[in-house]
Image 1: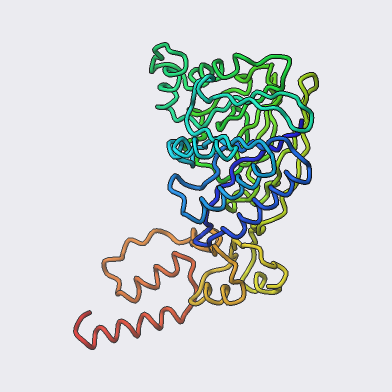
Image 2 (image 1 turned 90 degrees about the horizontal axis):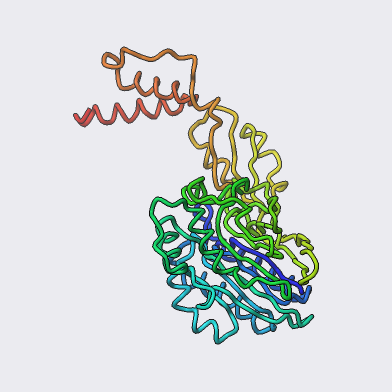
Length: 387
């Protein structure tokens, strides 16, 4: 059977105040076309469909229409909640989405109460079993273990032990007559962060070893880390990564979805399908003259600029006039401070103009016009008796 594995759509995410819904729409349209052109039997969306727990109506409309389109084409659609999603809301929509042929899992469930999905591949007639594990917070991991295992889970237990308890229940019926799949949204030890994850929910306290997944799993479809990667484990463990870079920390990531071909008696074969929609993110370094030398060379890329010279009045406006897609403009630290200046200890006896000049010098600002403007403002205040 053929599966398409994707995750971390983060629909509704903005970048430095820029809305990216058009890009996200193009990315999801491309994912849909790949699913159709490769005639996949199922699509696995491993969490973080949305950027936040209260997505806008536009964001929800885009995600729901995408899932509905896939389901209408006869594709099995299974999606779980990530740490950016609101699991209880997924659960509220669960009955309605089930009627449309879409399986949503917002909270950890027992295998016999919706934690496991079974389906027959339309292309081969092979049976599949999908164990679904949405993101578990530290606190909810304990409660989930209690609910699923029906035994009291001690609070002192490690996070990964609670996850093991949940997985043990979900994968108990894995056998050799069908394709065994695991979907989860979590951090595996040894995984590399993509650059845009919430670090507080990705650090060691939320990490589990890749060996936590049973050897009987034919494929483990993970979400949460935004970089495409596979991890050494008894079972094939893969992060599909985010299909669109969510911030400049991900500008060098390769954006793909994973095409998985698998049978009960054969190991999974994974092919990366590139996602080309969405604007490129780039970091450019140079002087203002160098940055503005050829504006057309950047196309419609979003830019993060590192300026290698001292700042001056109007620098930002000058750059944005030529490069309107520059979302961040920073003076390189080497030029933003003057480390050679000794600490000033005579500030109490210096005039306001001298203090302002000191501030400019300490900040690496070299623009005599600012000093003249400050003098004019100081003179105006003095003339009105408000100095």
